[in-house]
Length: 172
Image (cartoon, rainbow, N blue to C red):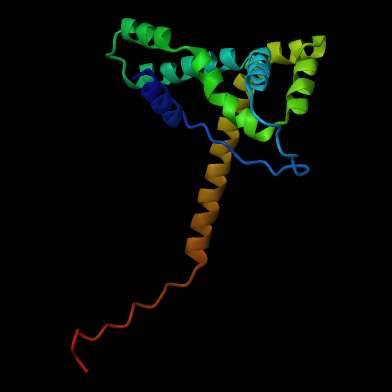
């Protein structure tokens, strides 16, 4: 039930994933293994993926609360209490396994264990919050621009002639 709720929350939150072109072809990742998966978990925890997942859940629950004001706070408290961010970490491991080599993961871990890496992680929730707000503003402005351009296009397009009547079936 919790996984279904989280999936529903994610879908309703309006998040979009945009595929970025690779800078260079990625080498084939090394074979999977318990040690490699543990390194990936370490990387995910160092990057604060578990905390970011909880931040996203809090934002989604906030949206649900607005759309369902009659639902008691105790329900939302219970829903949030049942969500384990380690579930998100575990779900993310295969993607990291597929797209990163063991050397990539080791290099990322080395970075995130530095002061700069830790500062980056500490700032990440605020960066995400700010960029989400900026993205909403940008998306609204872009949507309005596209809608206006579409209206201009429709107004400038000549009216299409009506379709010619089709002969009745069996008529010659």
